[in-house]
Amino acid sequence: MDTSLLDKAIVFAVKAHQGVERRGKDFPYIVHPMEAVSIAATMTGDQELLAAAALHDTVEDTDVTLDDIRREFGERVAKLVEEESDVFMEGVSEEASWHARKQASMERLSKASRDAKIVALSDKLSNARAIYRDFKEKGDAIWNIFHVKDVAEHEWHYRGLQRALHELAGTFAFTEFGQLVREIFGEPKPERINMDDYEESGDGYTAISYNHKNGKTMMKLYAPFVPMSEPHRELEVAWNLADKGLNIPHAHRLVTDGTRIGVEFERISPKKSFARAISQEPETLQRYAEEFARECKKLHAIPCDTKLFSPTENRFRAAITKLKEYSDEEKAKISAFIDSVPKATTCIHGDMHIGNIITNGEKNFWIDLSAFSYGNPLYDVGMLYFVSHTGDDELAQKLFHISAAQMLEVWTCFVPEYFGKEEPLESIDEKVKPFAALLMLMYYTWTGNPPAGMFELVKHSILEKF
Image (cartoon, rainbow, N blue to C red; front, side, top):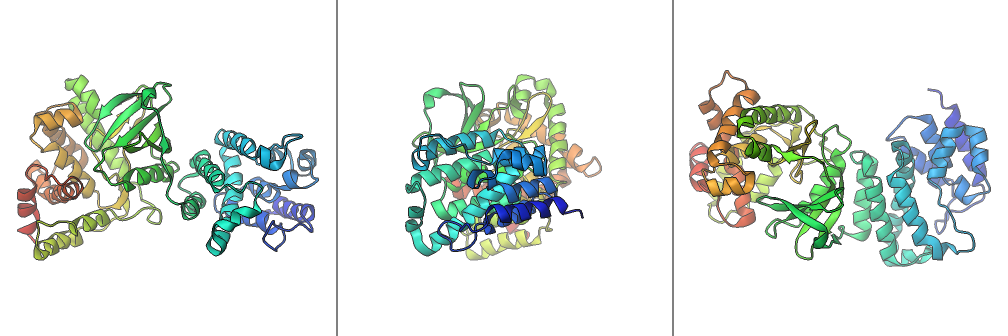
């Protein structure tokens, strides 16, 4: 490996920061850029990016100029260092200009290249680690060492950095950064939005979606019965999946209308869900059902990062403990079924049905990802069985804009495309029913209202067999 450029950059940075102390840390400043290099190395082996991480504070904090960097390390490294440097305002103190500088920096960073974001995240994560260590030791007194001492300002800055850097979601560095921000500032607080700026665009069982009148964003506000952890999790999941090759809308922030909490996303336009497409053109039902099956097979062929996501079975084990209508013996039987399911580490959507996949005519996008996890794909298929066998026209129309009979037809078209034509539909039904029963139980613990046929399905597909 040729490390000559990085070696040169490290020596250059050591000399530039020589004799300077890291503010309030009692150790040499150079420790920080060296930590930034080590963080960048978890995301890239590109020597110019690693060199830029080593040099990222030289122009902002020393007598080194961009021309010096350009002459010694080339145009690309100089550009990366420039993008990471604050622009100070002549005649204005650091404290007075802090908010404006950070706002400009975040706006610049959100539009920057992925390479620039890697350098920035390396710097910001090193800073967050230092703040977290001091916070655990000294509490809120740590903010006194900064030019700006208002903790709300620092929270605003670090939350904004998360949004600006979300292209790197899925990397361990971004995940650690998010965890530290939560440890320091607590769970993210939804930003209040003005409902006059939005128009309702879709109505689902757990949430209602709205399009912003600017045409660029949309949001999903969850129903009050949904646990508050769900929108938080959906935002994090969307960030973590952004780098995994799945087509998903970019997630921006948590929002609230004062009562409900939700997530704001980029708006895919033009778009319609597979369910809406079928409702508008019923003759396309088979085509969309089969295309949905192919998208599900692609999703279920992707190995999931088990360090970032949890086993899908955990959701059902948690739900079992809340079931008051079932005895301990019956709960043990339900747990025994979960134990019997072959383990897998493939990606699981968690709420897989034709309302949660949209198309713009060229690409298909998965949406509603709060339950994303890993496990046996039959957990996902159980969801489609569940929503396809309600037998309730009013509910099917409300959720999927088509009749209960059409939803059942979606299932019958899906099965041979997903499982193959060798195994009869009846056999697949029997295999999937207990997974559908688990999903019914979980939704029951959320809403307090048992889905139609839940008790019978649980009895015949699980309790009588385990």
